[in-house]
Length: 186
Image (cartoon, rainbow, N blue to C red; front, top):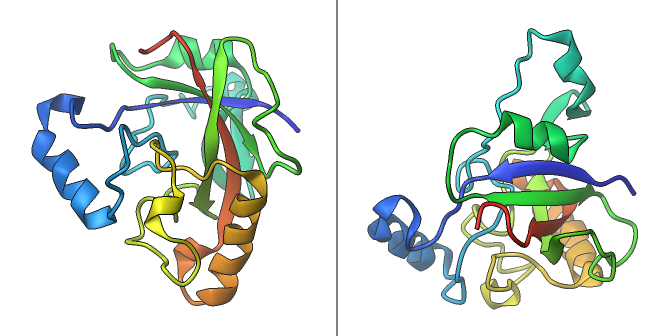
């Protein structure tokens, strides 16, 4: 399993002084347990790395999957060099499509926070930005960051999402294990 990196904007009741947006999101999503949403969803947690796609050397760092840019990068150094100027952010380490429980994998200066399920385009989280899939999982199953904590349950939701919703484009997902940096961006 390969560790990749990204940086995402924060989304909580203190982000960008927009408490009302947070309150509306929590009400709409039915995720009252959230302390902060830490998702790979590009609408809710903006991508903070913008590669120079005209520079051939940059493509050594950009991770592509089935012709889609994932928003993940091959090195932590690259992410830190390309960070857009934000004081507070989430510096994340990720593993795409893990094959085993990841909460026991220790990454220096990172802490495991859970699993996200991103659509096949790597844009939208089926867990936190689709209004819920109650036939597959309940909102209260997500942790305080809007993620699934257990590998087996994340894989079960991934499988059932698509079988229960074959016509829903956001139900065809990529499972992503996520660690957040303990110090940088906090």
